[in-house]
Length: 260
Image 1 (cartoon, rainbow, N blue to C red):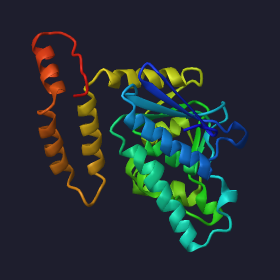
Image 2 (cartoon, helix red, strand yellow; image 1 turned 90 degrees about the horizontal axis):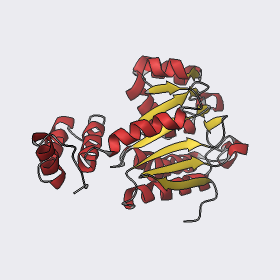
Image 3 (spheres, helix red, strand yellow; image 1 turned 30 degrees about the vertical axis):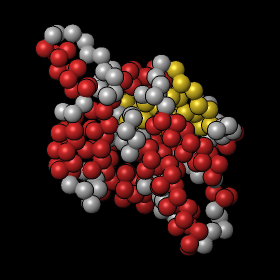
């Protein structure tokens, strides 16, 4: 796919996805979401990519929200379709990715931008980051999973406060709340994300995928998290990576995982 709203490149097994609309503070419009869908499928299907880092172009914004002009005139059914399509084609796709996805949050991560970051498995924020869900100020609520993922990350009471007041939090406040994993200087942001990703990429890829599925199952009422963990744990025993990992441990050498 030829991208216009995002930039995509692979280096050293990392797929870099950059929202490339700095003039619009990297706001998510329908075309950007379509391109993100394509990029995440590329992550899943490209054997050269072990994981992805998502960021926004420029120092001002990760993603400063959705493009409000696109849905200002929507009715109930159009609003429902907008949210449902977003869940299915981008946000849930990222959360359920068998390969790790890290959000490099530079600047504003608001509305759909924070929802995009929360869909990622790990979040690293630069010191200048501001995070929030301001939708109630538009007469809306978060519609791309924000009510659910924010509650999972920071707890019910704080999620209610942040959503109902529409307050933004700083990077350090977000770290204290558990909303982001790490805070760095802006210059060190990508390096920190790469450091974390490279630690993951030397581990067994199929085990990483199993861990993601088991942890996600904890938050799904239709699935028993413990049962999924048991099944995923058992599945790992049938992989070549398990044999390689245990043999390497016994031989006191570094494992060479092949994702098989």
